[in-house]
Length: 251
Image 1: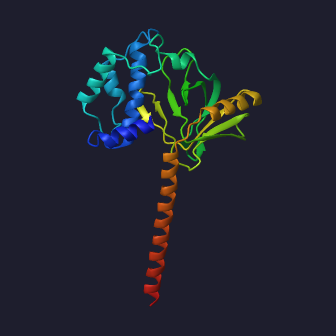
Image 2: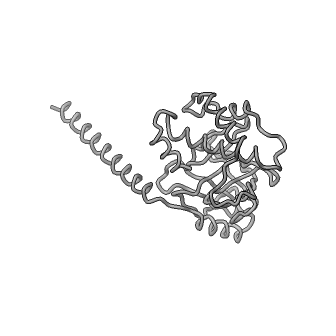
Image 3: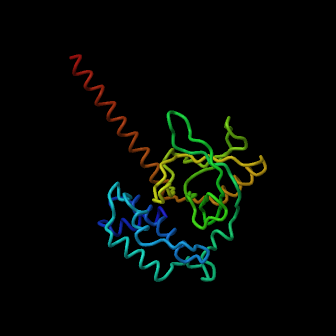
């Protein structure tokens, strides 16, 4: 989805203020598509709910209501399908996972210097993404963690056994999305997602499956290298400027 957002914004530069806006809206559209066309979802979202879900995602501002309404009407009229899908199962991703099961998920934001409490979530791994739900009966995920340019490792944690974490090797923010308590779609701001499995064997199986699902993009890696070089160059120039200023003061 990140690659799609970047490409879309490159070709349509006047639609969104940033690629992040396009990314979050894409996540919201996927959830809307599932909710409107999954027969198991009885309480179908209204256009007003969809508008409320996307408030403030345009760098704090709202997208034009005409755009949100047109997206809603288009998805309601005709669902989109993955090209390989035969159309018989809109919930193919959730019904045919690479792995699924209960894990404890640690809140990744900090509060007063400490991590938030652990929450038990139902995880589904498929299509190079890790989805998590509050209950197994939920038809919509609470969050999606795309497994792009990330790594996974086991890690010790004092508060929980059998822990592992998905992390960005360059300490960049992982492009994930979730819904908040009000149902609004928000973008994740985390560099690490930490989980705890029931047993050591279960942890190793999750790590094995996640490693097999991680996708890497050479273009992304090239940009990361260039970013590091640029930052190093800026620090070097700033250091040289600071030294020059000190010499001027001494003279």
